[in-house]
Image (cartoon, rainbow, N blue to C red; front, top):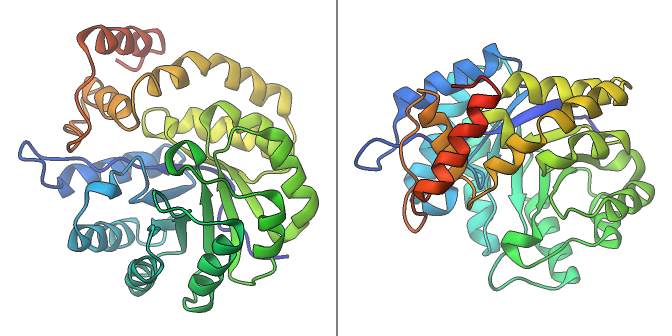
Length: 295
């Protein structure tokens, strides 16, 4: 059995921007403090929701370093360091390791993609060359590449590959992966709509977009299921389904940043090529936030 990085709900945190779209570290620190105060179990920096794809190399490293220093050991910090180029992913991973990240979140290669055997080579090379635990990240809707259960079975044999963020939307595949890997691979839901279901199957928690605006609800939903009260967790899952849907009514992280702005947290705009929500989309999001007393 490998060490579990965290249980519960980790936030795939947004990266706040100033008006000129530079990173707003003052607001970022405020968001981190608010997250920790409201029960978030881990901070995931430079993920999809954090707009890592638009960051320069220096920004990527700076955000991870700032996150580690600001969190200061209170909860685990997981650094997104994936790339479609293996040597660059290793470079980012080594920088995150120097900063003291507790784990690395490494997305599958995208655009050029690879085969399942290529995935094994890619992740094994990275795991062989860092000491920090690796969480795989499977999000086929973004990358066009899916990690198969048999590939997980091969990868989980590496002592440094400890978990996966699974966002394939396929509960049957998740169950098959759990059957093949057992205690050798922790599974986190990568989809807020499947928190209860994934944990009920044996998952450890969620890496969440919802946590950005409802950290306590996401934490409670995950921990109720983890502690065996799936009925209470499912009640929350159903209750928050409209809010989850609203947060994915446009390309992530456009709606969640808009939600934070409506809530008064001044997360700023997204960097291009992401565009603002339509007036009708923003109005619908605002109406949903009002129903949950978030504004």
